[in-house]
Amino acid sequence: MQLNGSQIIIECLKEQGVDTIFGYPGGAILNVYDELYKHSDEIRHILTSHEQGASHAADGYARATGKVGVVFSTSGPGATNLVTGIATANIDSIPVVAISCNVGTSLLGKDSFQEVNITEVTKPITKKNFIVMKVEDLADTIREAFKTAKSGRPGPVLIDIPKDVTAAVTEYIPHTPEKIEPITSTINESDIENAVEMIKASKKPYIFVGGGAIISSASEELIRFAHLIDSPVCDSLMGKGAFPGTDELYTGMLGMHGTKTSNFGVSDCDLLIAVGTRFSDRVYGNQNNFAPKAKKLQIDIDSKEINKNIRVDATVMGDAKIVLGILNSRLEQQNHSEWRKKINEMREKFPLKYRKDILTGPAVIDAVYKLTKGDAIISTEVGQHQMWSAQFYYYSKPRTFLTSGGLGTMGYGLGASMGAKCAFPNKTVVNIAGDGGFRMNMNEIASAVRNNIPIIEVVINNKVLGMVRQWQTLFYGKRYSHTVLDDAVDFSKVAEAMGAVGMTVKTIDEFNEAFTKAKELNKPVVIDCIIDKDENVWPMVAPGESISKAFSQEDMENK
Image (tube, rainbow, N blue to C red):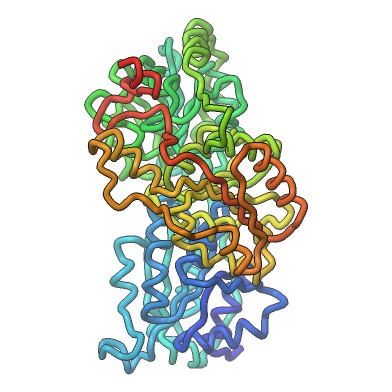
C-alpha cells in the first residue's frame, strides 16, 4: 500500500507494539503529530512540559516494563532538549527510541531555522543513530532501531527524519518484528567449567549484582544460584530488586554509601562473583585495593566491560539469565555456614539506623516502605534522598527501583515516575526527590495533572544541595559555596498552582497521615517533607579510599 512517511512511522510503531509515546510537538514534526491524532485510540501520547521530561518518562516506562520507551521531539532545541535523557538511558543501558524530525532535506546544512545536526550531537551517547534521507528507507530504519535498542546490551537509538520525508509517499509492506533472542553464542564451555571449579573451591564467596541481572530477567536464576552456593549477596544501585532485599542472604548495597557489611564482606571474601555489573568507581573506591583477597569472576554480556575498571580472573560472556541457568545445572548444594555466620555477625554489629525522634530522610523512606508494604515502584532524583531510597526501602522485585545510576541526572525521577505510572496505572508509584532535584523538572507536575497521572511526589527538603553540602562538610572545610537553597519557595503551593494536591509535613506522624491520604486521592500529590540541613548519608567511603575503610557518623565522632 502507498503511505506517506508520517503514516509509515505510526504503522511501524504499531508493528512494534508501542502503546504509549511521550513527547512535545513543533513545526518539523507536525506531519507526524497530525497522523498520530488519527490513531489516538491505539497509541496514547503524553504531552510533557519539556522534552527532557519526555525523555525521562520514556526511560522510566522502559525500565519499569522492559519494553522500548518512545519519545518524540521536533528539530533544533526540541531535539537538543532530549540529550540529557538520551545520555541517562545510554549509560544505564535502557532501550529508548527517540524520533526527532528535522528541517527539510533541502534546508539541511544551511543554518536553517531550528536546524541542528542531532545525529552528530548524539553519536557518543546512543547505541546507534540514523538520519533518514529517503522515505523508501524509513520503515526498515525504524525496525532496525527497535531491534538495536533491545538486543544484546540495550541502549537508546535516535532516528532523525527531515520534514519532507514525513510527507513523501512510498510503498509500505507490513512486517512482523523478529523475536529478540538472548545472546548465547559467546558462552564458552571452558569458561563455564572454570567458573564451576572456582565456585566449588571457594570457602568465602560473595555475589555482587548489577543492572544487567535485571535487564536479562535473571532474578529467578539468581535467587536459586545464591542459595545453591550459599553465598551472601550485595548489589549496585542499578541492581536493586534483582535479588530480594528481604532475603536472608542479602547484605545491602556495595560501595561509597553501601553497608559496612557488604563493604567489609567483599573486602574479606575469597571469590567475588560479579553478575551484570560494570564496576562503577562509586562501587570499587580504590581500584588497587578492591576485594584484595578474592579471585574475581565476571558474568557479562558486553566484552567491553571486562577488565575495563577492575581486573578479573575469569569471565563468562553471555546473557546472565542463561549463564546462571547453566551454572545452576552444573553445581551441587554448597555449605558456607561459617562464612555466613561471620557475615551475619557483621550485619548485627553494623545495622543501618537513623534518628527516630525527628523527621529525617531515612525515616521518610522507611515510612514509605511500610505504608506501601514494599509493593510500589520507586523512582528518585539524585542525591542524598537517592541513597536513602536505596538503603531503607527493601526492593523484592526487579524493575521497581528507577534511578539515574551512571549519569546521576537531577530531574530524572519525576518524568520516570510518570512513565512507570502510565505503564502500570494500578501500581503505587512514588518519586523520591530532594528539593534541588525537584526544582530541575518540577514543571512536569503540571504534565501529571494534565494527563491524569496520579503519581506521589515526596520531596525531602533540607533547603540545601544535600549531597554536595555533605562533601563540603567532610572534605572542603565547611565552605558551603552556592549549595544553600534557603529561599521563599513553597513546594506545596507550587503544586497547588499546577493543579496538584500539595502538603507540607514536619513530623513523621504528619508524613504518615499525608502519605496515606495521597494514596487514597488518586491524584498527583506533592508532599514537602522539611528535614534538617545537616542530615547526612551513612556509611560513607571517602573518594579514592578502599571500601574496607567505610565509616559512619559514630566513627567520626569517636575519631
